[in-house]
Image (cartoon, rainbow, N blue to C red):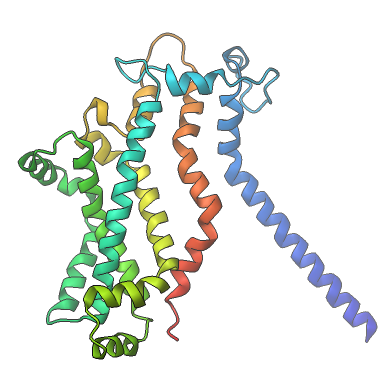
Length: 292
C-alpha cells in the first residue's frame, strides 16, 4: 500500500514538474521578442551591425533611449517621440474616463431601469462591437469636420469614446445583471432617484468591472494606429503614429537600437498596466458571471 502511495505521489510530482517546464518554455518563447528588443535598445550601433542579434551588450548604453525620446526624426522634424507620448496620454485619459462613465450609466439603465425597446437598443449597441473601423473612416471624418474637431486631440477623444461605448456598455450591463434588482426596488420605494441609486448602490460594488473597462479601453486607445493616423495632424499625433514615422524615416544608417528603444517606450504604459493590474482584469471579467 505504501509503495502504491509513493508511486502516485512521485507520478504527481513528475506531472507537475513537466507542466511547469512546458509553461516555462512557452513563456520564454513568448518573451523572446521582448528580450531581443530590450537587449538591442541598450547596445551601441557598432555592436548591432555585425549581426549579433541575440548577444548581450558588451558596453550597455542608454543613449538610444535618450535619442528616441528627444532627438529621433519622425518625418521632417527631429524631436523624438516624447511629445507624442504626452499626446497619447492627453487622448487616453479623458477618453477612458468618459467612455467608462457612459458605459456604467448605460449598463445600469439597461438592467435596472428597463424600458420598452431596451433590449433592441442593447442589441444595436452590441452590434457596434463588430463594425470594422475602416467602414466608418469617411463618415467619421465628415462628422469631425462638421463639428470643427478635425485633426485635433478633442476629435480623437470623441472618436475613441464613441467606439468604446459599445464595449463598456457590454461589460457593465453583464456585471449589473448579477446585482439583485430588489436593492434597486427598495431604494425606489424610499424615494431615491436614478442617479442617487447609481451612486449609492451600484457604483460601490462596481470596482471589479471598472478595472476591466479601464484596462480594456486604455489598451485599445493607446495601441490604436488607424484612427491616430487618419484623424490627427502632426502636432496631435499619438505615439503609435510617431513610432511608425520614426521607423520609416531614412536619414543615413538605420539605427536599430533607437528604433527598439522607441518601441519599448511606446509599449511601456500598456506593459505596466497589465503587469500591475492583469489579475484584476481576469477577476473583473468573471465577477458577474455567477449570480448570487
